[in-house]
Every structure is written in structure tokens, then in C-alpha cells.
Image (cartoon, rainbow, N blue to C red; front, top):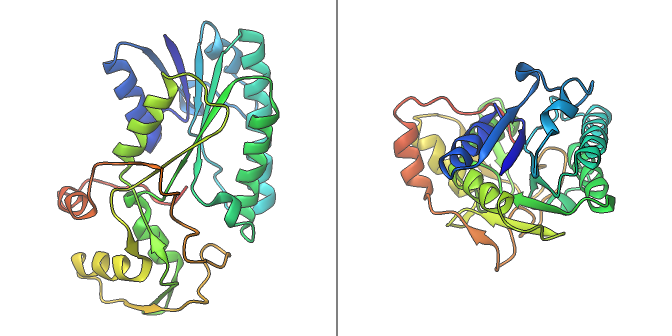
Length: 258
């Protein structure tokens, strides 16, 4: 089965291509560097030729509302037009747990708009909502830092390894469309501030973590369960401390959150 991965050279996309090819599928990495640009439309129709499934794990280069909205709407419209012409039977998109609870954030409002376009299309679909990746924790900390202080709301937090996200998306891609949302999170729940304190200690980072219920998360207030999935969500297998041990080998991590 031919599966086109939009954003196929990124953190999740590259893992997804590898996993699907190992399963015997024809996974095609589609990105601007491979001549496929979903904003300009360049190469999109050719990439769709013969495809059964399209998986969109691309991301906006900007968190600013207007820029993110234009990216997600333009990209999704171009993909849907090409998918309709090519007869693609399943559109899979990666999004974020809590998107509908983070409407104070312009970026998440743009993600909501993307999901609305997918749901309104005639193309069968599956949307995978993942919690934040372990690989993005440093950039989350940096965004919450003021001087030597990191202010975070002491709410529940259930991050996940990108390898587990790729596994969940791959499983969804080869399955039947659910025409709904699948949630996936890490195997453990933490208090947001406590996990970050532990992470910084493991990095010998001297910044002080302060539990502040009013601290914003990318412009949005957090409630107790904003960042965690429902109880029946699928869970990854990689534990945070195991990932920390692996990442200590010097493996480069991604620069910013979904």
C-alpha cells in the first residue's frame, strides 16, 4: 500500500516512513526538500498518484495565529483537492491532545480550524491527538523562563516519546478510517512543575521551577486536565527516565513543540 507522509523528513515523519517501510508498505516522504510543497501546490498531485493513504504530520513554521491559520488552511485545502482527484481513501492527521481546551492560544485555534476542514471533507479520516513529546520539553521550559525562573502551572502532564507517537500514527494509517479522534499519551502522568524540575536536575540546569497556577502555556491558562488525554486513550511504552537515559547519549532533539 502506498502511503504518502506529508512532513516525511521531520521528527515524526522520518520515523513513520521507516516504520511503514519495515512493515512492507510503500511509504513516501513528502516535504519541500523532496519537491512536494503543500503551500504552493508544487509536486502534490504527483506525490498522490497511486496513494491509498495520506498522513499529514507537517507543522506551521510560526505559532502566530494568522500565519499558522494560513499554513494549515492552505496546506489542507491543497491536500484535499489532490486526494480527491487521486482517489485517496484515508486522510490521517497528527494533532495535539487538549487542542479544543487551549482556545486562548492562536496556534491551537489554527489547529482547530485544520481539524474542522478535515472533518467537513468527504474523504474518510482519522485524527491522532498526541500529548507533548519528550523531545519538546526543553523548548517548553525555555518558553516559560523569565530570568532564572521557570513558572509552570502544577497541573497534570503526560508527555510521550516521539517513537511512540510514530508507532501510533503508523498503526492508524494502516487501519480503517475512524472518522473521529484517537488519543495517545505517555505511560506516566506527572505534575507539570515536578517533571520539569526533574528534567532540569538531570541536565544540571540551575533554573528554579516555581509552581504558579496562573502561569500561561503558550498564551493559554491551564486547568487540571488540559494537557492529558481521556482515561481510555492509548498509551506509549517508553518511560520518561528511560528516554532521558537514551537522550544523554547526545542525540539531537527537536526544537519546538507541536
